[in-house]
Image (cartoon, rainbow, N blue to C red):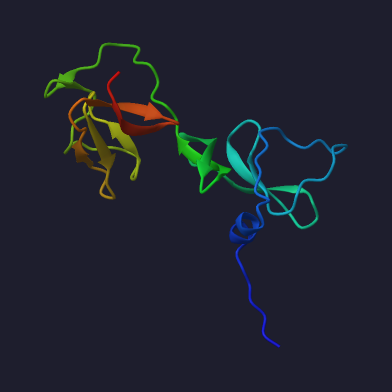
Length: 155
């Protein structure tokens, strides 16, 4: 007899049962559906519904991120995404005509992407140094969507 194992997420997606709920399940609520995922409330981590139909924490979101429901392959699933940058409280020093840090400067969170001024994207590399990812195409600008920088068309 041959047995095959399948990761829970793949099984849930294949079965079409992946749903997301943004609120916790009180003890008197109906049981959850096995294999579904959701953000915790508040959105500081991701939970999964166990085979016992109980929500359990998959894991907390890393520092500087929060759980956001995003479309993925026809489903809405929770992901830990970068928090939008806080509004500046003081005038930032401009370097190379762009506010904030510039490529080549030190950064603290490896893998974190940011807008580099209004027309480019940069990333904090594994050596904690900012690296230019690329400039936005003509007639577009860098904007944060769900906490991540994207080049979007000008309106």
